[in-house]
Image 1: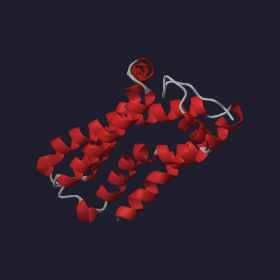
Image 2: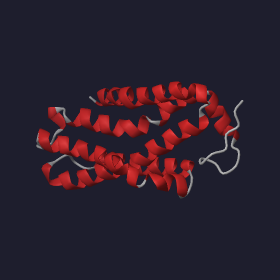
Image 3: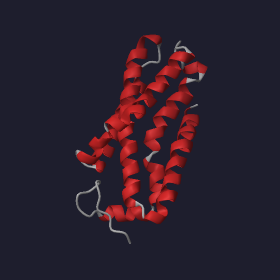
Length: 171
């Protein structure tokens, strides 16, 4: 087997060896939080019965705020490689993302709360940039060269296909 020592762990971590053996499927699951928030919010909020008087244009802008940080993540991507380690960034990114998703679920969808919802969605988008970067780094470091294409394919399957499934479950 492949021995993995990388940014996720400063010393050899046997758990990563196990992950490497199942990496294509791990990549699919690891990106689930990354896409779930965007698709679930977009799918559920565009249901006219759950909009709370918010226009479709405002909802579109709200969903777009989740994507906005991904446009600029190249600016803070070096932090993932130089400060802390990948495991810590992944855990914190998921915790912040989860907290913001729970927060959006606790705020009434109404015109008066658009600012608060937008802030929480933006925070979620920012947090998921770290989830995405660390998952991609894990794939690059953990996958044997002959499995990198397969891992990337499963990752994109989770990225593209996982979100709509979660969104449809909310309807």
